[in-house]
Picture (cartoon, rainbow, N blue to C red):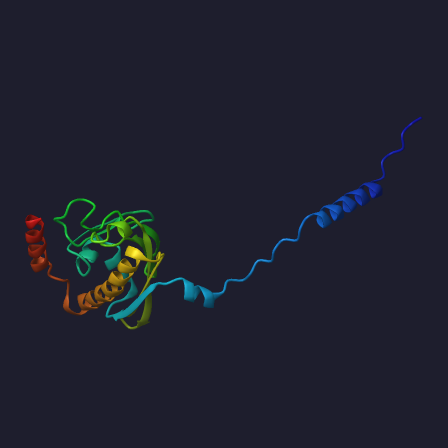
Length: 207
């Protein structure tokens, strides 16, 4: 006896029935909640600072993405490779041992020409446990008028307690000073690091 052909309609019905059974057997997925900006602002601490400088966004961006630019306001020496994962090392004490000069081994995370840079950051050598960690600094350049740029700094990625708190306190004081030096750089010219370097050299010899 020749078997009857399987009905396409019957096949679709079986598939739908199996799908319905599977759906009832599976527990309902938990709904995805929308981000709560109010909650995030409470639980995620950050350092925020800003300054308006007498320069165009492209000029300020160039200062943050070249070694000569960094040396004009931030530190006496620097290694800057303006590309994703390129080095962004800021050496406050060029005479110190490798790894202890300042922001050693930091790297760029993202670059949006004339608009934004982000990079990793660490704690000072005086906080060795926190220094093993990495935080994230985001700097944005916003045009505010003819030859004026607002520079906004946002520093995130903090842990809690111990040396984390000490590093947070230290950099909460340091970043406004850095931005003040940036502002002065565009009104009074690059910083003269000679007195600082002489002091660092004496300090290194005494250790």
